[in-house]
Image 1 (cartoon, rainbow, N blue to C red):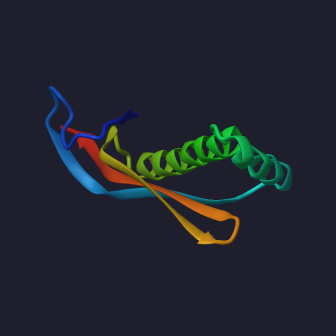
Image 2: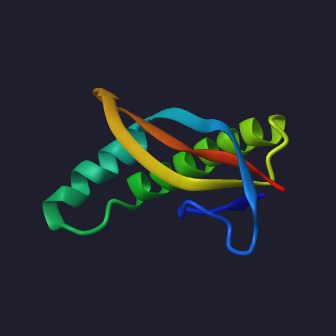
Length: 103
């Protein structure tokens, strides 16, 4: 499955199938939260949160790809990611794009 954040597939004629998406809501781990609080005293990257967001993006992307495969898609174009805080200690990551089939 090709994943592109441009609105075409170079060298391919395409037919748009549908919008596909993947989403996940993750919560903070108490240990990571404690360590992040300590890190704010000295500054620097909050690696526990970076890892959590990377994992969230991977899960959301897999869900989007699964949806596109269900439609028989060959690629997903115009991919975009977003995130938001839903409540104290929980964040949503969403990815969406257009599933396309090669002609």
